[in-house]
Image 1: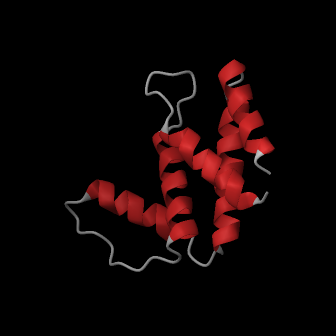
Image 2 (image 1 turned 30 degrees about the vertical axis):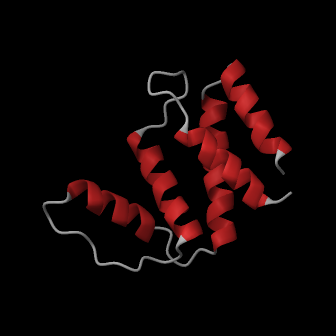
Length: 106
């Protein structure tokens, strides 16, 4: 398998993390995931930056823009690596199980 398979598992796992669970990505982590996901699936930013009243939209757009120029494969690898780093900071059986599932997809 490839980084594509690991990316798919990581996206699925991040999306299914319980809000009150032991693994809690920060808002900065979430923006990192958003930017890398968009770069991996869409490519470089292809929209105008949102207006001044859309703060969430601006933060998301900026997170995506930070990854401009990266290939889809590079963005997917960085996404997986960022998630593995969060799992390493939150040791425990749930983190270990998710890490094993991502590594098994390789």
